[in-house]
Length: 194
Length: 160
Image: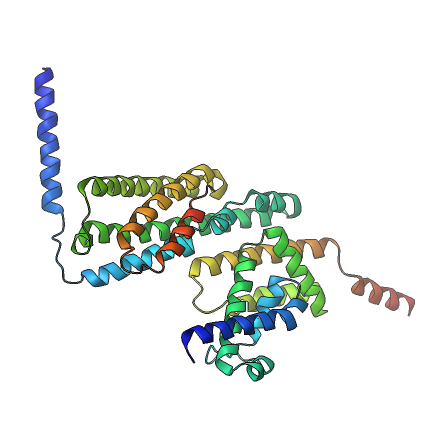
């Protein structure tokens, strides 16, 4: 019985691998340069626009909530909570979109520009999967509990996002070597917890 | 003009602008609105005669744009309490009845045209949201404690 389960598990694993191989988009050099620029743009948007600690920190700032609770009527408090929720939902969506763009580049086109070892590819795949899962969990948490019910998950997402940005940056550094140091500094700033 | 010398000139012009003009505007909100008012809505270019005469039109334009982005960023990362205080100070400087001011800002949303060009939509929306909340807080504050002017006019009419 045990060996049957084992064989079934191995069979299922092989089937999944086969499906992945079939579904994997063929990687063609055409359009790779455009994909590279899109990836570079996505990385810049994440590091400079969406993940800086001072901005993310403001989205979840507890002092804002405390101030509104202490100084505003109930209706304004409700308005504030709803607006913060919408802002954070939009933020999570944008972060997710930019990482999808980066992921498409890494798994579709990056091998035309750089040699990526199997270990790096597996690490990146794992981080991207973790990030997408955390993005989904964060979205659901914010949707049902509001921005202030999801601070810890947001912190986790920012942490994973910073790791993925750092990995991607290494891959894309050859494009703009002069900028790479500045961006490294920014990703370090962005990686601080919420 | 080389790129490096232009960059140096823009930095010098920005310093000059901060020293001679922006230092008199206490809050990022004041600076944001002032700098937005120096921008031509049709071209998106900034104009400042004094700065242009000391440097050049192009350098002045870039220095104003830099300072505008800086003011926007400072306001963006301000706490809500700070934004309420800035808005109240701005409102008091305008010498308009607070409730009229709030009604005008709610209706016309002048802050929407005060953001620098190429600001990302999320940052702009976050600032607008904070300003909407700040207006709501100020409105409730002024409705609870109405300004002195209506009371004074009532007193005069009673006297008459």
